[in-house]
Amino acid sequence: MLSKDSTLSALDRFATNLRRVRLESGLSQEKLAELAGVHRTYVSQAERRVVSISLDSIEKLAASLGVTEEELVGMSTPE
Amino acid sequence: MLSKDSTLSALDRFATNLRRVRLESGLSQEKLAELAGVHRTYVSQAERRVVSISLDSIEKLAASLGVTEEELVGMSTPE
Image (cartoon, each protein chain N blue to C red):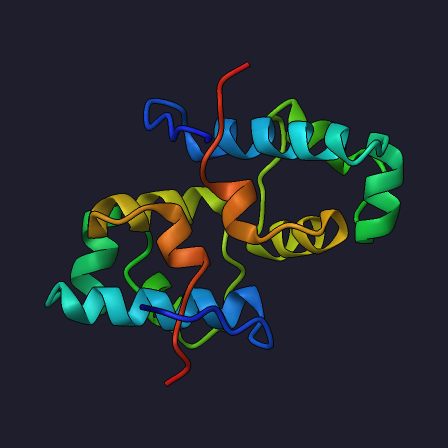
């Protein structure tokens, strides 16, 4: 059961969730970017927390990973 | 129990959730914008789905409304 770490910013939680779900899916950053229709460096930048995340991108990435937006935005376990 | 309507876009769900939680809190669009530290027309634009929503804004609005980001991004009941 994932615990929500409220001390983490939403961006930190998103980056952590995105990376974990992507690795669990066996996808490279570039492959996920291609599937989601975002710029090929966007996933790398998102995981490094160096880009602003839009709800639209969250929706595309979640759909490509087969998870809900809540799962990417919400609960996460710090690495 | 709210049901997730997956036919709605993330933006539609966010707009619907934002409006309902804001009204339940008894806040005007301008007052919520002030509390969240976003432009005073941003809440109105978000509820009318005419502005791009960033994770940063979702975080600010959720904090000001005392709900989680998941509650604004996820479950919603169409109006």
